[in-house]
Image (cartoon, rainbow, N blue to C red):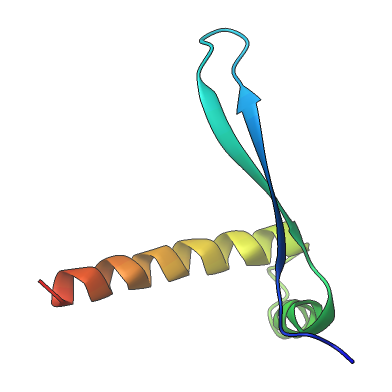
Length: 73
C-alpha cells in the first residue's frame, strides 16, 4: 500500500571557511510523491529531473505562504 508521507532527512553542515553551520535536507522521492513528480515532468518538457520540479514546488509554495501571511495581517 502506497503512503502519502514524505521522507525528509535533515543534516547539519559546517562551512570550512566561515565555520557557519547550515541545515541540509534530503528528500526521498517515492510513492505518491514520485507519481506526482513523474506526471509533472511528463506534462512539462522543461523539467529534466526531480530536483528541478522540487525546486519550483518549494519556491512556489514559499511564495504562496508569504502572500497568505501578508493577507492575514
